[in-house]
Length: 485
Image (cartoon, rainbow, N blue to C red; front, top):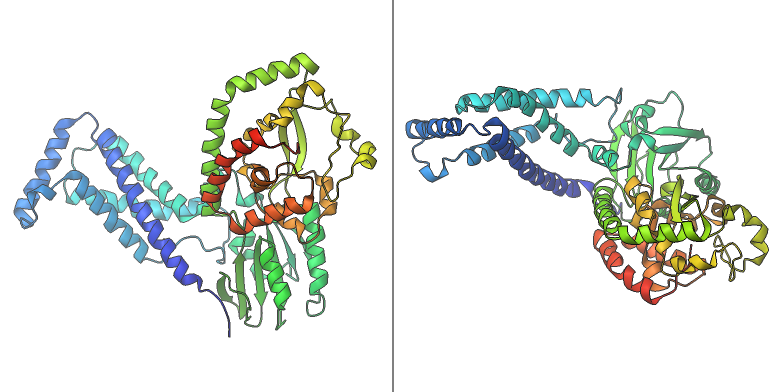
C-alpha cells in the first residue's frame, strides 16, 4: 500500500487562496487606477459613466436595486468574471516544473495573457459605456494587469525580485543521458547542471549518498536528479535520506514506485517513465517569499533605529585601530553557496589568516574555532562582541539575500570538512543573525548543541517561530554572553 499524501488536495487549496488573493489585488489595482488615472480629475467623465450605468439599468435590468449601480461594483464583478474565465481554461495554470519548455523567455508567457486581458477589458468598457476614460492611460493599463497575473502565475518571479533567482541554482544528476528528453523539463532547463554521474543503483545507494555528501561540501547544490531506470525498490533508509536532504529531488523510473514515508510529491508520467518531484526545500516558493518580506522589513527597521549606534561604533573602531571598519569574511550560505559576511571589525587586520597557526590552542570539537584568550582580539572593542553589536552589518547581508534575520549561524568554507551527511542539513536554510541557539544556549561552544537547535529550527520552521525568536533575541543579548562567532 502506498502511504502518500495526495498533492491534488493541497493544490486545490492553493488555487483557491491564489484566486481570492488575485481577486482582491486586481480589484484594488483596477479601482485605484480608474480613480487616479483613467478618470483622474475629469469629474464630468465620472458623472457621464455613472449616468450611462443607471440608464442601462433602467432599460435592461431594472430588478437590480439602484444602490448596486456603482462603478466600483461593476469593476469588481468584471474582475471576478474575468478570473473565472481565465481559470476555466487550460492556458492560465500555475507553472508546473514537470512540463517541457523550449526556451526561457517570459515574453511567450506574457503575450497571450496580454491579449486575453486587453480584449476582455476593452469589451467591458465598450459594453457598459465607460466612454470617458483617458486613452493613453488605458493603453498603459493593458500592460499592468498581465504583469501582475504573470507574477502570480509563477512564484519564481517574486523570488527572483527578492534575491533568489532559479537560474542561479545548480543541480547534479545520476544516470541521466545527455540526450535524454528529460533534460528539457522546466525544472532542469532553468537550472545549471554541475555534472552527471553514472551509478549501478541497485548495489550502490550507499555510495550515491556519499557522493552527494562530498559534492555538497564543495559546491552549491539545490536539486538532485536520479534516474532509477528499472530499479524496483528504494529502501526506507534511502527514502528517508532523500527527505532529510531538504533539497529538491527528482526521481525518474521505468517502474511505478511505492513509498514508505508520508510526504507531498508531484507525479507525472512521460514517455513510459514515472517522474516523482519531491520538493523538501524548507525555504522555497511562497515560504521563501514570506520569509524574505519579513527579513527585509525587520532589517530596514533595525538599521534605521540603530543608525546612531552605528555612527558611534564607526568612530570607536577608527579611533582604536583605524581602517577597515567592516570586516568581510567568506561564509557558507544556503545550500552551500559561499558569500561575504559583514561584521564590525573587532580583531586585528588579517586575523583569519592566523587561524591555522592557532589551531593547536583550539579545544573545541567539530567546526567551531574558539580560543579562551584569543590574541587576535582588540581589547578595547570587546564590548561589541559581548553584546553582539559587531553583527549589525549583517542586516546588509539580509537585504542582499545572502542571510536571513533568523537561521543557523554561517561557518567558514573550511569548516565543511567536519560535516557528515547529518550535520550538512544545517546548510539547507538561509543562515541567520540569530536563532534558537542564541535565545537558548548562547554561550555554548559545543557544536552538537548548535546542531540540535539548528535541526529543531529546520524541522519546525514557520513565520511565527521567526517572529518569536526575533522578539526574544534582545533579551538574550542583554542577559547572556555571546559566542562571538
